[in-house]
Length: 371
Image (cartoon, rainbow, N blue to C red):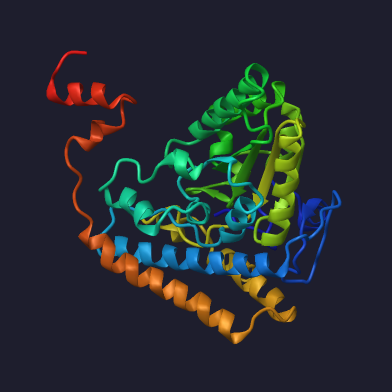
């Protein structure tokens, strides 16, 4: 069985090397802070409290969705516990008009973009074929096939570049794109093609890899012989290793990468070094391939507890704020427990409703008319 050593996976730099190259701005288990590259903790107190609120609520959604799946109300659930800092810190580094291409685990990102819990859960209950309007939220559909969204993101970023050249007066000049994927997806050919294409064309794109250490049961060491962020050099773009359990560091690193993309500097590869505390999904038994002591070491690095300690030390955790966060989490739990079992089955014709952009063509197709 492959396990981590002091929280650093085999095939990755040892802990001393990682400490020299990994951006950390919040004190960790040993109190270490490091900022290779000169990143600064620029989040104000209100934003830090918002980070905490959204991370706690996302963790509660994860727990409730898992319980719903275990009682037969969801067909499947893909957990995100342990990765809240990577998701919340990165999404708040974006602007509202930036485009997001997720995989299937970016629940905290979805919530931050206004996707409702029931919209998310409808996908896993099988009562909806899309869940939300990607254009309204600037958040594309979940992608279950590994790494395909990296090429979708490249295509969108290339479209931004082409429209800027052809219709400069009609295009938002500072739009950027971010694509989320995991360490397993980084091994796919689509990801390599996307990285190469984005670098060659200097596209306004950030590749955000959440390295949660395991591609289902395959450890990172069986996927790559060098750290993931260093692979960016071979494609011709900068790579940054950030402590993915440090929401402040993730925010700072992502903001710098997105700003660089806006300014025409091209793509950046970010490796957010984190851990999924649960299984790959509710269909997975991680106890078959992960050592219990490995999980406990990472629980000590829990991103929510880490931020809470920091907020408490800074005097930002008053009782009224903590109560408001707990009330929000409790309300979400009550809502999804009541809403999910009563979700109506979709009408049969909905599977075709959004296939064609012209509603008249869709109606003719559904009724068997010509066109």
